[in-house]
Length: 172
Image (cartoon, rainbow, N blue to C red):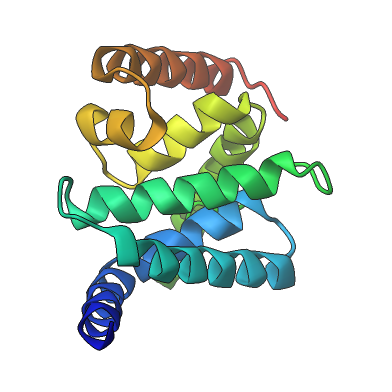
């Protein structure tokens, strides 16, 4: 039992360190309230640690992490206590440039995109969040349970929809 616990702890240390920023972004995307987002982040980390006792290596550790995080976040959003909300994609460093007007323009663009993504249906929003994390269609399919071809088509359609809404000036 001790060896199993040590393995679980080692896997968590590796996975937690590698994926903590993505977990934090996911929590903030699902929960707009900063305190509740931190609680959700901790809930994801706890679920991840617990789940690693059963990790058998049949998938990449990253896939496992995203699947657990996705499931916990989806459960949180579906509880109905709060509507799932998407907040900033990542504002860090946006205003650190030499041209404040350009940087403010970038910040406004990101906020508009956030507002448009916030209006997507939860399954589409989840696919886009994973896509924005840099995951490919195959990995997103493993996490969400959708077919990889379906994910690729979904990403293409969502991007086109967001672009059309963005260029039409649509606001949330």
